[in-house]
Amino acid sequence: MVEPDKREFTQLLLALRDGNQAALAEITPLIYHELRRLASHYLRQESKNRTIFTTDLVHEAYLRLIDQNYASIENRAHFFGAAARLMRQILVGKARERNAQKRGGGELKLSLDEGAVLSGQKTDELLALDEALDRLKTLDERMSRIVEMRYFTGLTIDETSQALGISTATVKREWSTARAWLATELSH
Image (cartoon, rainbow, N blue to C red; front, side, top):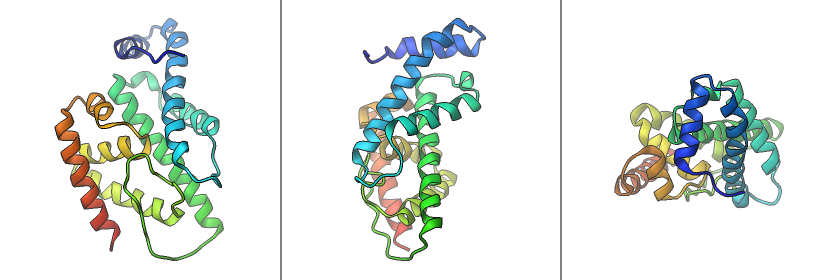
């Protein structure tokens, strides 16, 4: 499938939000395509003993988008933000399930490379990152969104810049600041 045109995607979202049910048939494959692309990028980074696969992650994220009435999503940037948060919630939920099954301590050695989520990292590390991101969100919501987009969905600097409507220099600066802040938070 050819990657959807950004304007077409946003126009269909707006038509759907305005009650145009015909837009639903057109946008569903585009949403599925975008979710699959994001999930595939993430899961390429995950270790071989993963507990969730691309199709499962895509279906769960899609169902949650529907439950949250994705017709309220305003544009492509809003979509990417919602998808990143949903995938984060799904992955953290899976990590919590695994953690509940095997309680264990240990030192946190979390890599904050973009798109590297769970690439062999421990469940505890993902849970610690989730809590740190919640704290970061209270300090700087945009910085938190940048981390979600870069780390959980593997968007590039340019894609993140376009999705958030900010310059690439701002994304680079805030990504660097967020990584430093998170490294400090996670070292405690």
